[in-house]
Length: 340
Image (cartoon, rainbow, N blue to C red; front, side):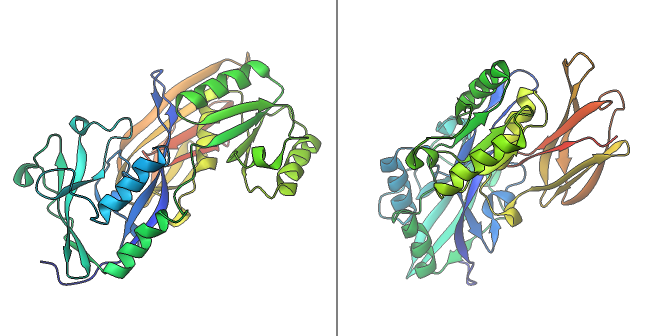
């Protein structure tokens, strides 16, 4: 049994949605992550695309049940006192695979141990155990306070919504459809004049098209300021739907900056610089507009990067002219224009 104490906390996190180059979609999920010794527990699990059971888009009753389960106020959902710590971001089927752990009390303390990858009711620790993770001993008062706060109005926000303001109706309609497909609500408007404050509070971001003048943008900002609604503002780089979706996903990220895997992206001089804080899979995609405003897409990189800054060579044909890069991990997405 572990003797040393480990700090326990919670922080907002996101599984970044997006429009993929193969025509598919990746669903957006907001959730609360477990912070163990000041670092997201998810980052210790190599490159795992998963979310905790404390997700923002589950019904309140289910969210409450998950919190009380982690507080051991209800029986373990799996044999052997095992609880799901991270599961599939697309569904809740254990067959997709989940990270589970034994959670138990030892006096006033809570202990998480025997982490494993599980696809049915029984975990094979020898074959699928995370042998380098845990056990963790948490002080009971700290553990209960963090989880109980979620029952007192500190749960994550509901499904995010975005206000789209632009001159090109066809692009806005496609963008709104793409956002709704990945689980982000989207509304199209010319401005925010006359919109009741309660309605404005439903938005997490406002995205402006390139054709919206600064005077119009300032008017929208004033409307949100009068309503005392803090939102993120996105200046659309180009009328390319996957690129705009990535910009909006970045704007909706509420996770603390110091707890993100992908922290920097720049592109110039024939290469892109990418910085990550933990080992993870990173994809880099280039989007380019040609002289006829047609979109060209190129997959430039897909691989696991170790912590640090990395230089990725850029194909000159893929980034000539007006071009942009999107780098993403399972939880973070960054966008940059390519400097020629």
